[in-house]
Length: 471
Image (cartoon, rainbow, N blue to C red):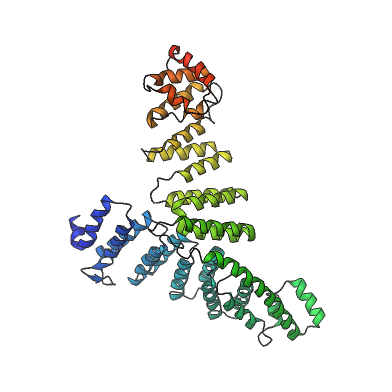
């Protein structure tokens, strides 16, 4: 620690504070800020190995704790680039995509970086643009992305690589996507279908082959007439898309303050605005569009679980169970407090529903192994899953497990799981063990809805005389 205090005293002071408050995002941000300076001077390519190492450790630690901070992934990558480590910069950008791969701004930053360092092989960059289109192409503010993609295709088009044809296809694909600046791309479309630039070789990129064949016959291959028909077709589509864009804008204007992950608390109204927007999308758009919107919403709302669970409900309704599992695992891991177990329980329920009982049990057992202060509902879930492995004849095992859970949690809630499948005599044996430990055992049981007065009477009369279970 003495070495660190000498390399960067300010950084060292903040790191001490972080040991006391490991979930303080403001302190993490201060730590990174301090690491970018040395003796009050911003780091540059002359920075020592120790200073660069400190910078990397700071970014790595922050992003391990808060992996949804897209701006810090960008800042980390750009620092690597500034210090002359181009491959490291690319690696950081790629790693960030694991967590914020549906963030439009992050993709734009990464693609602009790739264009700055582009070499002779443009295929890699083309593939990245396509990957980005599949992840953020429906974003209401994606016009900048499409214009950047279009600029790339036109800049690197040759006679042989098909980039020019790809640019026409790209413009055509945006005609029916509701976008904030939809008019910019519509003007590009009008340029494409202008009689001066339109050719028969391009027509198949604009309309289906069957329609093209009909038009050629009807117009006797008159390109000018076909151009006019295309203008009317795409103008009609533009009007429809304009209406759709206005519809979406009515939702977008309510979420402008809830687009990125930060340390601020989202209001109930902000969460509700996202939910209304997502409901609208589910009813009016394709599966791909809806999934992109959910992923986009989770960039800022993930720590609240509400939208994650809504997304899971939607995926279940579409029978996309593998995607459900992926989403739940991802957002369990990125929840900074890791105290909210709703997602974990939902993942366990999903595995049980799909018949993967051992996987469900492993999830709970692993969680309990890592968390000594797990909430009672996790122990109840453990009992629920274990009971699927133990059928008739295993009452004694389940009673023993219930006894351990009750003693661990100091709560009788697990009895609600066990009472519906065990005989009064076995319950009586369990309760005889607890009688000495719970002075108010009967009153505690009365609050559990599964114990009727009649059943309580039977159990109460039985348990004083029952042989106790082994501890």
